[in-house]
Amino acid sequence: MSQETCGCQPPAEGPMPEVTFSTFILSLASSALVQLGEVPNPETGRLEQDLLLARHNIDVLDMLRQKTSSCLEEEERRLLDGILYELRMKYVIKCGPDCKKNCGEHA
Image 1 (tube, rainbow, N blue to C red):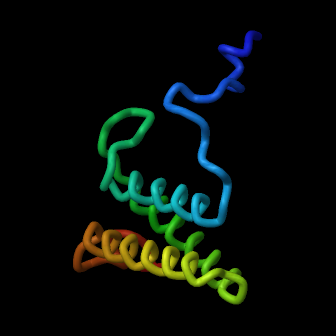
Image 2 (cartoon, rainbow, N blue to C red; image 1 turned 135 degrees about the horizontal axis):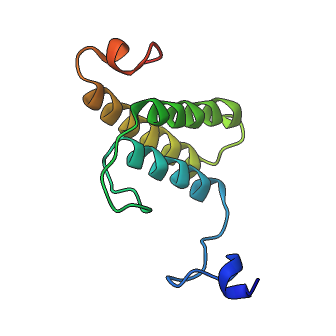
């Protein structure tokens, strides 16, 4: 297997961003936006919607907020709170008035 086919070469669009709490949160939020059908799936280029998986990612972000609340920097806290608010609003809009029935009991 050559380096060209093993996936260990840097992507053509540039190096990966530094791994920080903020980039991790943004990565999870980006996945939730794809699952909400807000942005195209990077693998297919199409808008797709999986509200159950979107809700799961929102719950993961909320769990991270709860578990890290005492050690987050103020900027990280604002970023996470803002992302959670936006994702929850988009989720509720996608689910509609019968959110619990349409999207599961955790809504």
